[in-house]
Structure formats: structure tokens, C-alpha cells
Image (cartoon, rainbow over all chains, first blue to last red; front, side):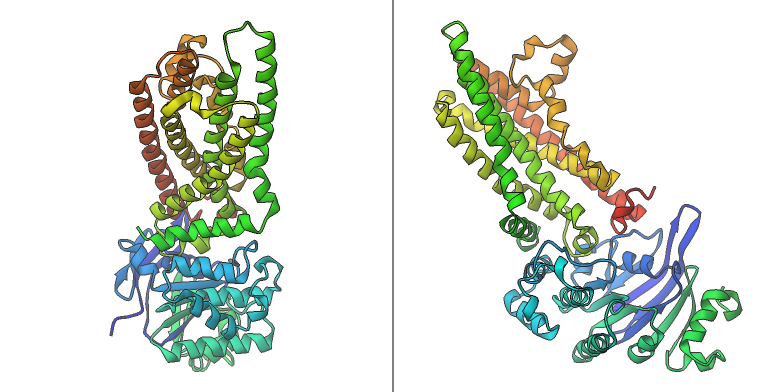
Length: 247
Length: 266
């Protein structure tokens, strides 16, 4: 079966700084992959390159076999994203935002799809409210609804639950898991919440200084590296990446 | 090209304008003020000047056409700036949207908003006894050339803001004022010094305003000159689009699209 996301030798340099240093990895259909690492490790740079808003200096990115560099529009039609730092425009209502983005992704039966998402993300009450007046949690739910509007084969989530209370975050995680299990979509998920990563991700990649240092099952990785918890392993990767072998 | 994706840019602008008093008013407020001001001025000039020359079609007509051009240009830049102000570049450009679709959406938005402004201008112009019938059928090529040139300048202005960041939006507003002395909106191009006349040859609106004055003076507007102005304007659209695309590609390389608020990433 075609890989949902296939990244090979991806590299991005800003001046003297190597932000992403030749990484390669896949996301398979139905798989949730956690992309972990300290601030500045290269997670968001990687996601920006997958989204086609940042051109790599080297390497290839394929979404369901479609090359992002040469067939950007077709590749991006198969994906979508939600990021804590990119809320929907605050001067449009939830419905208007979903309508505009639904058109951009050429969603069939758009009105029906918007109604489904408003229900799924508990946004009916905010349908005609401008996104700018919503609470951060409600804005996150609206962003996630937008991220699901085209039923993407590849869903990119950059700290999607960072601004949510624990109960809402759990519901959102369950919703995304349900979305993945129902179809063949793959998810690339960044988070600093190690509990969340263990709960949701099938596989985790630890990124530091632009390189993948570790890869494995997040439920087993801590023990495999003589750490008590995934959080402890995360801190070790962040502070002493060279001792963990990748460097 | 996708109709739906182009339409998305237009409908976004419609939603923004529909729900915002502060966006609706500028569509016609400034052009209305301009028309009233110049309407009274031309009426006054008609009373003090020697009989035989009608200032209304020469000056008020020129102001109307110039305001139309500015509205076209600002229609594009305003639609573009909505993405700047709402920090929406990442959301927008991470979709399958092509640059050609984005720019087409901006142009269509501009046509819709400019028609509103033009309607108000025509109503006020009628109050000052300015009729487009004075110019005959030539009014259509006049409007077309200014429309095309307005599009090119709007795309060029948007590219400047994309390149230099949100704070550079002030680059856009003086662009028409910078051009106006060269194109002879209110006076014949022959009034200008030779070097300015040379520059005016390369600016499409010059041919429109020269043609307008020719008709008002009872002469015939040069169809050939207007055609040249039209071709120039089309050329500028391609040039402006090329410039926008180049800036956009550079922004993809530097990461400016993803971090636009940082203004300049080298």
C-alpha cells in the first residue's frame, strides 16, 4: 500500500543554521506518528515543508506518492493541518471560515460537511460567531474542524491540544483517533505532552538539532532507553542528544 | 485553474465586507468626497474662465476616471491585505490554491468592489451635469485601459508588501500619487518637461487622459494610442504577475510565508 507520507533526505538550512538535517521517515495509512523534540529541534520546519509553505534545500516529500515539489496542488489537496500558532481568521465566523476553506479544498457537498463538523466539534452554538471572539479552546476546535473538512489522507497537527483543558483535549484526541480508525488517513502529530503522545501515537520520532535520534513505540521507548517515563526520555534527548546515539 | 478555489477568495472578501461597516464605507466615501470637491471646483472654474471651454468633462471626468483606477488598484491590495492583517498566509497557502487562482480571486474581488464605487461616482457626477455621453463610445476603452493598469499596479503593490512585510503596506497607498504627475490627469502631457513626457509614454493612463482631453476639445481621440496604452497595461499585468510569483517563490525559500509577521527572513 502507498505510504501516506514519505520523506527522504529532507534538509533545510537558514544561513549557518541547519534546521532540518537530512531526515527520512514515513507515515503509513491509519498510523499516528508523533514528532517530538525540544523547541527549535526542527518539528515545525518539517511540517512547513510538508505543507509546501517552505521549500526544502534537499530531499523529497511525497503525499500518497505525489511529489510536493513538482505537484504541489495535487499533493496539498490530500492533506490539511491545524497548528496552535495559526488560528483561523478572527474576522470571519466559524461557518464562513469553514465555507471558504471548504471551497479552497474543493469539498463535495460542502454545506452538509460543514454541518457534520459543527456537530462533531461541538461548534453549533458558535456557528455564526466570529472566530476572534471565541475562547482559545473553541478556536482550536474550529481549527480542527477546518483541518478535517476535506477528510485529508494526511493530517498534520502541530500541538493541537496545547490550549485545551484536559477534558476537551481528551475528547479531541478520541475524535482524531476515531477519524483515523474509520479510514485510511495518517497523522503526523507534534506535542510536548508526553502523556498525550503515549495515549495517541502508534510511533514516535525524537528530533533534536534537525536529526531523528530515536524512533519507536512511545509506550515502550522509555524502558528501552532505561528511563522511567517518556517525559524523562524527552528531557534526556533535549539536554544530551549525543548520549542517545543519533547525534 | 479551479473555479471553486478562485471563488473562495472572492466569497471571503464578500463575507468580510458584508459584515463590516468600516469596510463598506471606504468603497465609496472617499470617491464621493473627491467628486463633490472637484464638482464644485469645476463649477466655479466654469463661471470665472473664458466662455467656450467646459471644465466639467475635462476635469471632473478626469477625476472620475482616475478615482476609478485607484479603486481597482486598491480593491486588489485591500483583498490581499486582509490576509496580512488576519495573519492568514499559512492557512491560505497551505491549501491546494495556485498563485494564479489567488491573484484571479483578488482581481474579481476588486471588480466587485470597484463597481460599487463607480456607481456612486456616476450618481454624483450626474448631479454636476457630467455625462459619459460626452465621451461617446470611447469611454469604454478609457475604462478598460485604466482597469488593466489598476490591476497591474495592485498586483505589484501586493508583491511589495509580501516581500517587505506587514509594515510596508504604506508603500501601496502613495503609488497612484507617484504616477499621477506623469500621466497628466488634470493637464496635457505636453505641459511636462521632456524627461517626464518620456516617462509618461510608458504609462498607460497617459493615453486615456490625452484622449479624454482631445474629445473635450472637439478633436478625435487616437484609437491607435489607446490601443498602445491597452497593450502596455496588459504587458504590465504580466510583469506584475511575474514579479508577484517571484516574490512568492522567494518567500517559500526563506520561510517568510510561514513566519510572515517576522517581516524579513533574509
